[in-house]
Image (tube, rainbow, N blue to C red; front, side, top):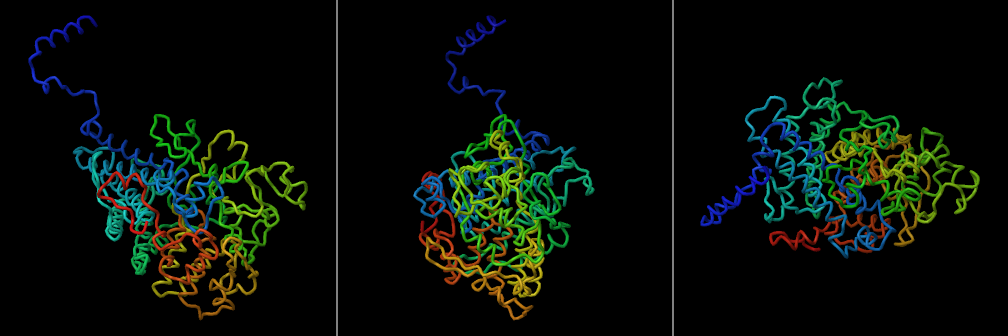
Length: 584
């Protein structure tokens, strides 16, 4: 049979020898085209799954926290020189792996959303899936992608169509971007269900899955309104954000977990406080989304890499560690209600690792292995290099390290051996949403309501109401050895205005308190860069002075435009319609 086919081809070639070139350029009937790749409702649903697959990118596996937290005043780096430069705002390379990977992998997810949104409308017959809900999920995720791009870069191009490889879109306009994000999020909110769980009454095609819901869309909408303003002048849309936050809190039926650490354990995922999580899992191809890899192979990675890049030894490399000021800020008061035998804020060990952690939290266990007696010769002895359990190569006693999402609730021997951390990343949760809500209440005139919400969040950590702090505050004065600035984490942050149940506090007092309270609740959860920009980093000299005292990188390298990240060099150079943000 093979011989017959060959001779047939030869004969045809001879007979057609005088035919034009166009006649001979035949298309491959087996190649994928738009018509074959997006021809049925099942194809569109598969493409929707492809959008969710993008949550397993390197960006979400590790780099989002290096961008939003690592670029803020709550984190720094003592790692390799180029990593230190980027974390400390030197920016010798705007094309740094963290930056260009974040930018390009978010746009990859946008492209997948655009395909689903456009091609779903071209399918005429729908029997199994709900077309409107598929489009709504894609629009909600596209809104979240552009929220992140806009909050990092201010002027990223906005592409809401299926782009060709040679397209060169123009830079975006921040106000227009915010409006488009809100339009997508609002449209999704109106269509999506509140839950996909059968226990909540859902009986559609995505039963018992953890896909984006109306409350995910609402969070994107609220945060966009809250951060839509002029970073040099202010004018943020607090009133519009307030209505959306109120809806989430009153109608979303989310409840704060009694134990703060339940928000970061793999054994308590998708809990009552969580609004949306990335569903990380153990997998055999754990390196698929490692350090910038695109993770588009047949055997993909579904694991997180934060534990390796943020954790301290022997587990991690500590490419990012906490700024030291977060420790004295946490310890500016003792707890009213002791939790797990400690007199301090119960959020501390879930957030940071530091030299006195076992002294301050006698019941704390790190990586299911380290305790007050492991890693030291005795419970009272100094930490030393010859003690069992510790690796001191990268561990420095006078630094503060990231504990959140660094596998601290798992066995570090397992982590090192398997290279897998399956702990879900909580994208939105009620605790941090409540503090956003408190800020909106304060900014729209309801100061008393704002304080009540702040007290609600503090109570979960064992802390007293703000009006009782005079009974629990601790002197917490710290001098930054890098800047020479001395900070009093009680007097400079508005707390005195609330003591003895005073009602004479002002909006300014509440905003000063929120500076610290938001750090305590959501440190290293990709919120801080956006928060400090909104609070006046580039327009309020008093606020900037406080940031400069506590953070070396802001003291040494900050200019107003550095409230934003620079666009990656390659993307600017390869697109004549895209200019770097003015001032970079």
